[in-house]
Image (cartoon, rainbow, N blue to C red; front, side, top):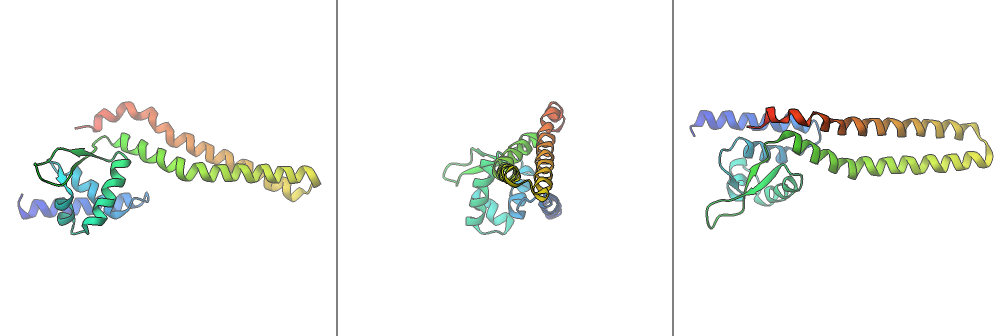
Length: 169
C-alpha cells in the first residue's frame, strides 16, 4: 500500500473515531475497529498496536471489549502469530449488541432506581398526603414513561434490520 493510500486510510480511521466518539465510544476502540474494517486481511495484536502507534496492552484490552460487543471476531492468521481479528461488517448487528449491553447496564439500573423511588414517594404520600410528594410521584411516573419510550424507540431499530443487507459487502 503506498503512502498516500495509507494516509487516506489513517484519516478515515481518525474521522470515524471522532464521529462515533459522540456516542461515547472510546477513540482507541473506534480506531481499532476502523482499522480492522478497512483492512482486507485479518490483523493481529502486534500489527494493530504498531499501526495505531498505541500501547499493546491497551490495544489488547480494547480488542477484548470489541470482541464482547460483537464488533470484531477472531480470524485465522499466520502460524506462530498472535491471535488475529477482523471487523464485523454488519452495522446493525453491532448496534444492537452495543445498545443491548448499554441498556442492561445503564438504562436498566437507572430505570429501576426511578421506579423504586417513585414507589417510595407514593408510599410516603399515602401516609401523609403531602402535595409535594404527589407532585414528585407524578413527575417520576412521567420520567419512567419517557425512559420506557426511549427504550422502545432504540430497540425499534430491529424493525429496520431487514434493510441491513444493503450495508453488507
